[in-house]
Length: 147
Image (tube, rainbow, N blue to C red; front, side):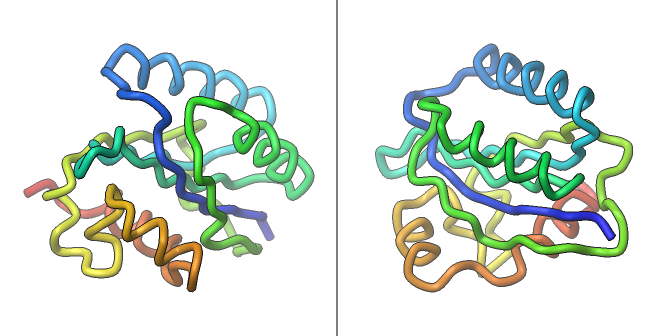
């Protein structure tokens, strides 16, 4: 069994492509050293937000817990909420130290529960009642054929 964690957060400042690439490079190097895999989804901001992240981390429970503490202390994002955590039979992103997609809010339109991922209302809803199905959403979204 492999441990996993899915969380969401909001970017603290506007992130351009260069800033996102720096985050990815740091994440991939750390994850490779610690046998952590996963996917990072960045949704461009709307309604005054700078953008939102949704990330899946897979690996050893202690390493995932340590990485969660490190990520949640990072000032580049705020309002960090764990949506799902647990164990599963195998990794979904075993070939990726950190897979990545940057999308516009409109790219999520057909995913009803996660369509407002970049909006304040989504974060408020997650704080109140979570977001069941986050792991399945990330896997399905990653594997979907581009439109």
